[in-house]
Length: 125
Image (tube, rainbow, N blue to C red; front, side, top):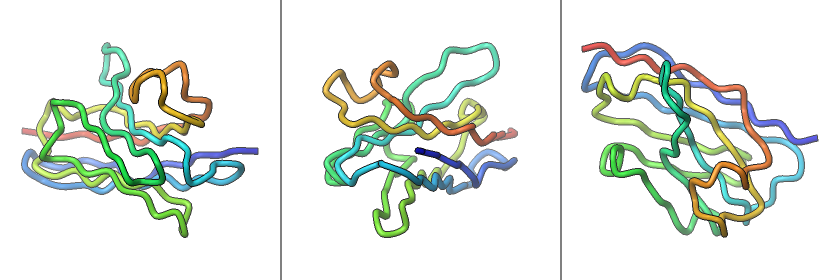
């Protein structure tokens, strides 16, 4: 049984940093596509960052590129999202997700078979 468990969310002031973690268990191989999504209040869920080919490749949404870094520690079965220079617009519930591949596009949500329960990030101005 696959489980994804996020942690690391919290409340910070604008300009601050947080590091999210997603520990996964079960049948998630190193070549799986793993990604972070977020959903703000009253908004649709959107892709933030994705890692694939065992972490060799990374892709970012325009809104976070240069501020967020996705990484994966396969030995610890953990996906990370380092978030720097946080802005109030980054306030959202952040979700970790895993898919056997990202052939439909890195942020195509229908291909992600497994999802975590989310961790809340709140950025105040």
